[in-house]
Image 1 (cartoon, rainbow, N blue to C red):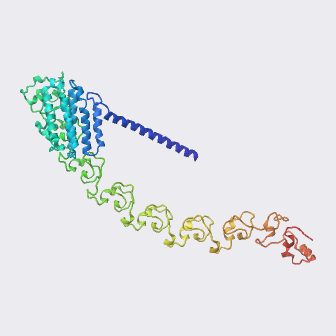
Image 2: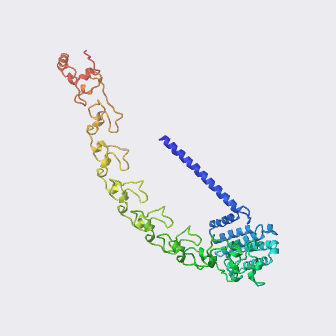
Image 3: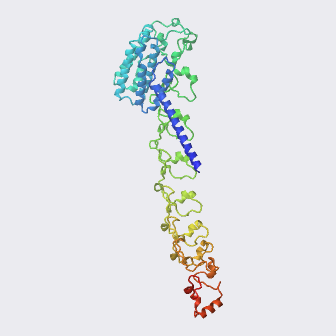
Length: 550
């Protein structure tokens, strides 16, 4: 047993150490990821930039409300803007400013989520950031010299956005739509990645028959942002076809549309940067009936009401069901399948809260439960008390239990406790020895029971060669120990050798000397001495077991 305990203690220590090691490793990894996202420098031309950009936006899940998400997007934008002055005059101007444009688009879309219109500091910070971008771009040389038209257009669009943002009458949540309205064909802010030096595998733009001064020469009607900027001209303009090509997302991407996908405009969820991450604005899309889109997402036996009763528009999990808003008052209608076998058939609210199944607290009074047997008959051990559970147990737990014999009118102990008796036990009522609290300690009242014949009960308790008389000659009714037996006559007298029956053939206090001594000779001798009644007076002369003839 000791070795087993030591092994268990060693296993617990080992498990604790392993748990601490895993937690330490996970903490280190988390700290490394956090440091990579928050501290590592932003270099769009670097190989790890895409990973860092993805992790930065993944951190949005830790921000609860739309306002905090907007502040975080602004923080990412500030990181993109930081360092623009350092690449002025270099070819990297195009790639850096394009990343600023992409993040600027994210910020505007995040503003659409609402709850940001009354945050004055948010508007002031955004306008300040736009001013910083303008200041940095005014120092650009490479784009200004090599692509003056595209560069001027970008500055113009940036200035228009700044004017919209500075106007307090324009809500932040509407800046994205207002900014789009200022551009033709509802296009986005122009990307500058298409302003990179001409590659050998692209079409020579001088062969494209655009009219002089046409906006098509700058691709203003469909800005090449994100993934679109990575395409070659031939990717869309096969066969030297330039007019009449589709400019709507679904016309090109219909083949990759999953089954049962949202049928609205792709730009409500996706950006040109990639399919993921997606940002669907239910308010802008006027999506109020969740079932119309998300019916296929429901698990079997799911709540049939609106998704918004439990879920937010951000993610399925975590979900919080508001029973009051959903008007859910009948627990059984939804949760009947959650019940274990032989479970309470009443309403779930009698035991459970609307937050979780456990812990559960059954209110017997609210449930009107007065008949314990109707629910708890299956909990009874064999030969258990057949009365109501409340006679012993409380409504909180089974143990401890306290049976009130008086309240139940239980006077016949044998009726319940006959099975608890050891072999050869006292056949009378249990109450003669035991209390109603516990079996031990027990105290037998001989006088109250009228027990006068010790042998009737205690014959089996006698050691070998024990005194054959009544127990009370030596023992009290309290305990066997502390016996008081007075025997002045030598126990080794004659041939007795401690055998009580030699002198006490009838037991008790009666005795005889004639088992060893001849009665006739003894009579003759004592008569000669003038002691005719010697039989009852032996001890007067022979108390020490000797002759004492004188």
